[in-house]
Image (cartoon, rainbow, N blue to C red):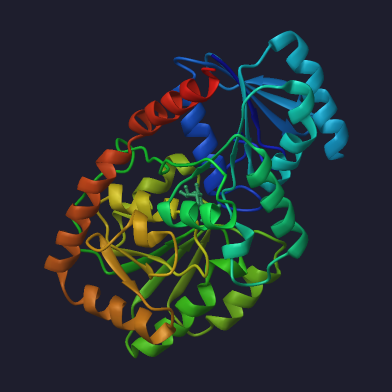
Length: 355
Ligand code: UDP
């Protein structure tokens, strides 16, 4: 099987945790490395770095065309010699490439939204909502990481074929260790949607000194980082900057719990990494964490800073509860190894390719 993967705006070669590179980059790198043992994979990215091998059977193909029409033309050109069996587009900008190539390529088209604009709640972009709707309507299959998001898509477009496959985690890299720690951890890009303002509010509500480590860099310019630093002034909050994915497991191990205060989280890869590390997750129940973390691997609350503070205090004072929630998380995370998730993708691709 030969797959054309489109990740127009962001490359799996970029280190995750700042700028445009986050969960989707980690996802693409892990999924396709795993699939490359049974498929040939070309990942198309906008950029001028040429063609770079990303391991056996997998290449990152940079196309130096920022205009989506020109970018799509190049993919059509490559496909005349590569004869792809399937195209899988990631994120709405790549979905536009799917729209532009569909009628020429005439191969099955799979799309993953990664972020579903209509569900974001804050600062939504109407153009993007409409484009995503068009993509969902026109592609052959949408893959959603949660049933909740899949249900919204089905509701919007009853004829859309949506398949739910959760994201995966490297359960060998992220693994349990004793949890007697006293620090909270946030991992992720620093972006308004990630809700760090609520987390700072929660720390103020706590009325006691509990340290917070923040791992990750600014997502859209430095302003957000500077504002949140100012907002957290006087609190024991440590901004550690982006950390290489390969080193990140140590930060999970050294934390008592992981806080994911996002206003919107499609799936919550950080939550799953915390679970694999046997660390409880605290976040909001109206995000993708409600499926990823569920009821027994952390505490998910109704959105407000006071509830967040209450959950932090409760877990902070109860090591047994931290241990139990962490152990439940680890058990659940073992079902989400990349090997298992890649098998689900392979089967899905096979079924779509078959006439
Ligand atoms: N990440 C990383 N280094 C960092 C911060 C995050 O490798 O300094 C990884 C993290 O382990 C997770 C992904 O980036 O796999 C999550 O990024 P983000 O929170 O931005 O999530 P997104 O919104 O992109 O899904």
